[in-house]
Length: 153
Image: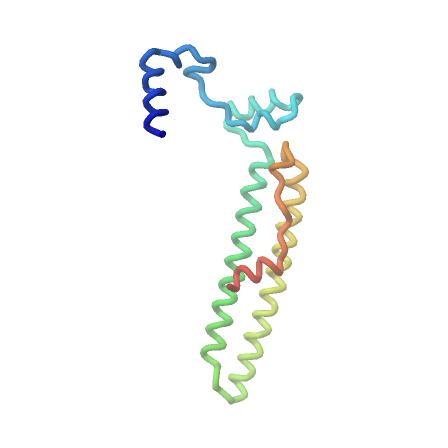
């Protein structure tokens, strides 16, 4: 079937059936313009022509970066915690017990900091959602507990 369709397209191209189509030789529209309110289209065109991005695109990048940073900090803390537990397992001396408690406290604090980082990212997501030109571009808020579970698997 693909060969038949491909053959028909090739024959049509050879006959020149596609030579005079509207938009021939022009760049394809990115599709974003259709979601920009009419009053803002000229501003978006000027920005696009001058390689300037709307705030919401830059905010999307910041959100992704901040979320990745939060994940990396938690992953490092988990590695440190696991290493401490592995090193201290089986030790019964006072110093080792104290170090184990300290490691557990540090891990608990890392999880709290991760939740705080996610809350900060969620504030940025809420602001981003107010700025995007279409509801299909909005992002869901993150759930810190679910993100923690994903990272720990």
